[in-house]
Structures are given as structure tokens and as C-alpha cells.
Amino acid sequence: METERILLRPWLDSDAETLFKYASDPEVGPRAGWPPHQSVEESLEVIRNVFNRDTTTWAIVLKETGGIIGAMGYGSSCDCKMPTRDDEPIVGYWVAKPYWNKGYCTEALRLMLDHIRTTTDIRSLLCGHFMDNPASGRVMEKCGFVPTGEECYDESLYTGQGRPIRVLRLELK
Image (cartoon, rainbow, N blue to C red):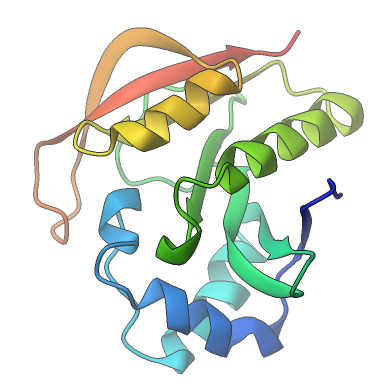
């Protein structure tokens, strides 16, 4: 899957060092609800046991450089008890700090949504953003997600219990 500026491709074990470079940034993971990575080995474990097992997650690659700048995916992996419908995946994404506010995340989400519409029978998708990360919510809204009026709370010990998440949904069919 690709656009003029980016492509989405599967994660490889050889991406662990690049993943660690960006996922160890203390400003990246906490905005998405996960702690900064502590080692390349941890990043490799995430590639093998999260990105390539529990969810459908792609590396966002900047075509100009061939470098990974983030991740885009969907699946059932979420500890926040999102109010999903039956068989409704949750969308998740992040982009490395040097690439914030350049439209890459919106572009990647639109690309993934086009892929989902043409290759799956998924009827709707759910996503959410922490209230203190409104930029993520703007990405969702630009791609057609609509606030449900619901909130849920992150229950992980890392981010602090009770951290509110604004919930949005996209009807596909």
C-alpha cells in the first residue's frame, strides 16, 4: 500500500533498531498509551508478538528516505476497555516526533482505511485518543471518524488509572 509520500509494509525483525530509536522517546509512547521502549530487544519483542501476531500493524515508511517513521494498524489489542461492537476492530497509530504535524499520520490512516474497505468485510472501526492528545483526534476526524459521545479510561498502571479517552467510530458499510 502506498501514496506519493509513504508506504505501509509489514514489520520485519530487522526494523527493531529503528523502532527502538523512536519508541524509546518519552514523548511518543505515552501519547499512545504505552511506555517508552527500554531496549532494542524489547522493540523486537513488540514486532514479533504485537505487530505481527495480535494485530494487523504496518510500518509507515517515508518513500523519500526508505526509513520507518511510525506504525499504523487495527485489531483487538487494547487494555482500555473500549466500547466496541461485536467484531469491531480498534485502530491504533503513532508517528515519530520528527514527523509530527506533517500530515503523515492522516495519510497513513486514509491509506489503511482504503485497504480495509477493499479487502475486508469490516463494518465499522473504533478508535480513541487521550484527551491530552487532541492532535490524534484531529487525524481521526479528518479521516471520517465521528465522536460517539462516550469516554473510557486507560487502566494501565503505566499511564495512570482513569486517564480519559475520547471515543470515535467510523461506519464503513
